[in-house]
Amino acid sequence: MTIATHAGEPRHQVENREVVDEIHLARKSQPRLGTLQPPSKLHCTSLLSPNNDYNGNQNRILLAPRNFKLPSSLRTYHSHNHPPPPGPFTPVESTILSASVPHIPIHGFTLTTLSLGAKDAGYIEASTNLFPRGAFALVQWHLYTQRMALQKHRGIISPAVREGERAPGVGTKVKMLTWERLMGNREVVHRWQEALALMALPSNIPPSLRELGALSDEIWYLSGDKSVDSSWYTKRASLSSIYAASELFMTTDKTDGYKETRAFMERRFGDVQAVGGAVGSLGQWVAFNARAGLNVMRSKGARI
Image 1 (cartoon, rainbow, N blue to C red):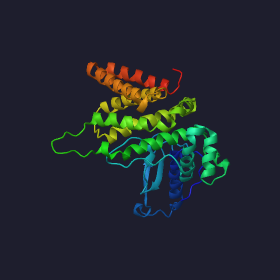
Image 2: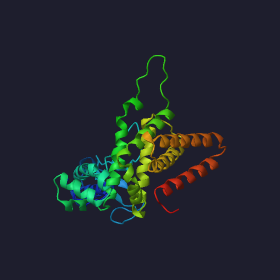
Image 3: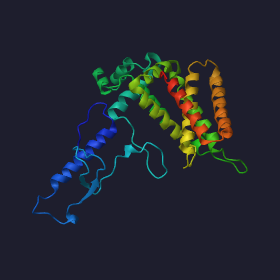
Image 4: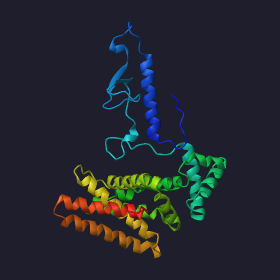
């Protein structure tokens, strides 16, 4: 089925509209009253809408094909039992954004960069209208591609261990992958203040924070974390705070190899470990992570 999409429309909205169309098709395919066929011939299953269905009616039975599946994009976390959600960009968007990357060090996270990328990819400059958020699409592309690039560090994720040697633990892997992600900003670090300014715009804060959460989840997942208790949340909240603070610090670091940034990151990990070991109640721990969350938003430019 071909569905007309709008430029920049969120993937989940497109998938939801596909689901609605499938439901309507299923309804039309059913026989009228007086010619009702056995359920086995309807090839449909029913879904009870707890609140409102897509037509605004309460608690109606919705009919959908038996092979109906919920959109995969609803799952925003990693799982060993399910594949990751699809990427957030269409093939055309990916082509333009990929071609724009070489222009970022010179022209920054700007519409000029986006226009040059569209031209290099063989599209007219007006193709930038595909990106309703404008230059912020460049920021999203950088965040997404650098997060995906972490999967290539097999030497960290699944290191070869010699006989008699001890394999690195989850915590060590988390630090190493966090550092590798920071190093993914090296080519654009002198332009990263522009990216932070774009992320600080009110309409861009939610997707920026979602991507930060996805990064934390990616790092813990690749490091082999399999926790299923409340620490699942605290670990990711703490890592988000550490990464955001280290990323901001890196924009002012002029040392060779970003040694000061590395030391800063190590201190932040040490602080979290110290607090985690000293906190005696869940309430204190939640309060600590709440403050960390506020610091993350402030580092993105939010006035809180």
